[in-house]
Image (cartoon, rainbow, N blue to C red):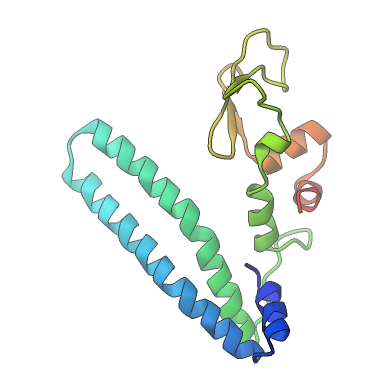
Length: 170
């Protein structure tokens, strides 16, 4: 959720803007703390374990938790900056971090067709056998040995720069 969304919801429900922002922050804080505790506990498990499989699975779990945590922290920071009168820092090209997160969450299956399952021929090189695999919301080609998310796939397929890809995926 963006600052603008919270403000428009406040207007829609007739509550003060600051109250709506503080309520949203009070909703975000327990989620952020929970994820931070999960990550901390997983890091301790890695330190205590000597099993490489446990370490690999735990590292994967940490990456997933961090991926979930980043947008929540970014939203909380933007809300606090708004309440404190600080301006949100724009990324290069006048796009916000929220716009980048939203573009990254755009379903990659809407960009690259995976109608026959999790594998397909890579559209980035000549390919006779399916070598591209679909994961959560990114793809990896085992021939190119490269990975793409929604933004990088749009950049490569449409021949656009980062800013144009983010704006196209809004």
